[in-house]
Image (tube, rainbow, N blue to C red; front, side, top):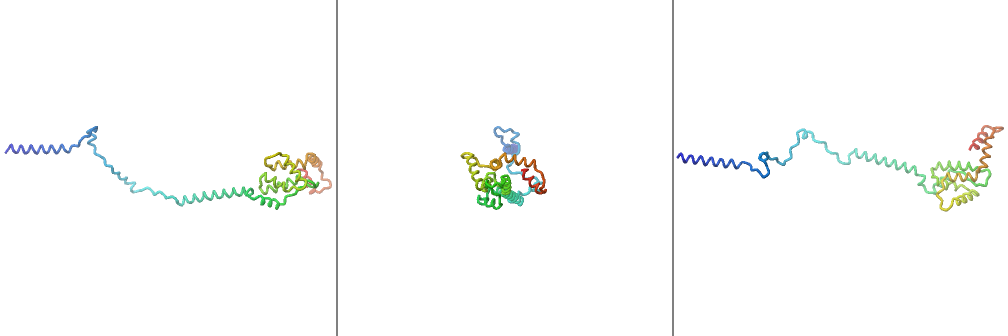
Length: 220
């Protein structure tokens, strides 16, 4: 009996030892025992902290919010105002030629014939220039409109002067035309005579009004 009990106890000890060794984790190649004993981590995402769950982030506003609509409306209004201002600045140039000629004639600029001794070339240039300035025409259009008010001998002079500029010349501008016009119809001799008359001007029997008119006329 004693030997049988010993055999039974021995078998139980062997069984317990076998079960204990089966629970020891196996060490993979290249892995230390310390690493093999570290608990493995699961791939599940950790839950957010408690303060984030209590205070969630504000939602992102979708496109087309009132603020964006207001900014778009302001940009559109700004572009429309700029386009309107540009159209106003270039309105005279955008009109047809016939319309600009009609507007010029309706303003009643003077006519210059070149054959009437009472005509004053300086007065013609000054009054035509004021009319053109009101119309806001370009320098080249100013010459075309001013030449339209020339008559008789003045037309012959203008055609001759245009030919003297040579073949295929650049467009004539107002400064060039007005200087050539005054050189021809108000030469240096006449200017000197008017300058002497201005320097020797005395009121004499003239009224103050007549004296001022003579003074202003010769002062030009």
